[in-house]
Amino acid sequence: MLTRETSEMIEYCLSEYVQSAIIGDSARMKSVMHENAQIYGFLEGELFAGPMQLLYDYVDERDGASTLKWNATLVDETDGVGIARVLIENWHGHDFTDYFTLLKIDGNWKIMNKVFAHK
Image (cartoon, rainbow, N blue to C red; front, side, top):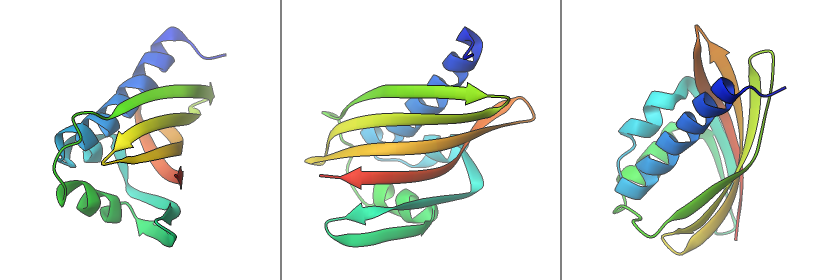
């Protein structure tokens, strides 16, 4: 069962991820990602896959997305392993459904991987 504390900690990770997109600076995103995190999905018909650095570069090369809206629609956790689904609207005119896997390491939650759908 997802406790309030765990829910808040995971929500913090997701919020930092999104705030990085809003301000156009990957620093906050990096703080909640595992150093070996990976990303997978299709962006404008092309496979966007590899180390999370690809996403950091994408964020840093664009202006902030101040009109971006987001909502975590699913968060679940079992014994320090979590999943989350985040709906993102209007990230530079694009909508995304992101699926994250998270892991609690030394008391801190880290995003381990991201798989996304883009429309």
